[in-house]
Image 1: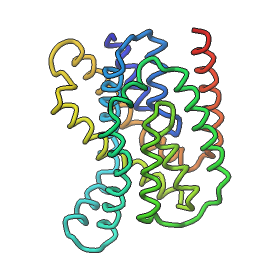
Image 2 (image 1 turned 180 degrees about the horizontal axis):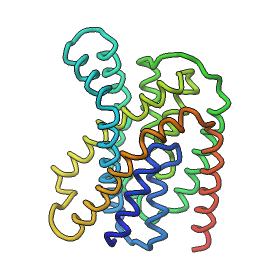
Image 3 (image 1 turned 180 degrees about the vertical axis):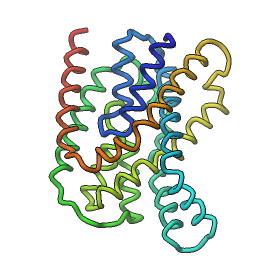
Length: 264
């Protein structure tokens, strides 16, 4: 993988992370177009590094929210911030379980698996279309709904299933206010990504020497910068736009991916 390709992939990650169109699916499609023959483990590692970059941009955008959450958490009082932090922890349980016990199976799904990406994008399209017809409410995220949203996030580990699309759609179907759903969706992934990157570093999965690391750094910087610029206006776009628009987009890209895979 060249520096230019890594930068392009980083920009794709930064732009698509905050839309319900599956950033991991778009990364896999872009890798296929570039003709990269990364082994599944390397492909997954690069994807995680780019997600880490956008997680950092999310931390910067939501720094006030995150500060309030930590402040409330360490006060050990039953205030709104403490309860929100507990809900974030509850939402992490399903994805953490899948990541710890099925890591090899997950890694095998990444790397030139375009047919799977296409099929999962069609599922994302259907989920978004179904959620778009749900009535808007003013419900808060509860402990039970946090766990259910966490299950949606765990399923979204599959490339082509949009994490934000799955979690926001699930929240809307549970009757949660879309603005609150978007905020919860973007904040709940941050500790998971940071934990995954930390695990990979301690496990030696990320090599800090050689050309591969410098290419990862190029992709990381591109994703981080793109995420900073894209996060705020894309979050506003998700809140205001109909999810059916994104559904149509995912369906079109999914069909193109399936056609491409079958023609190979």
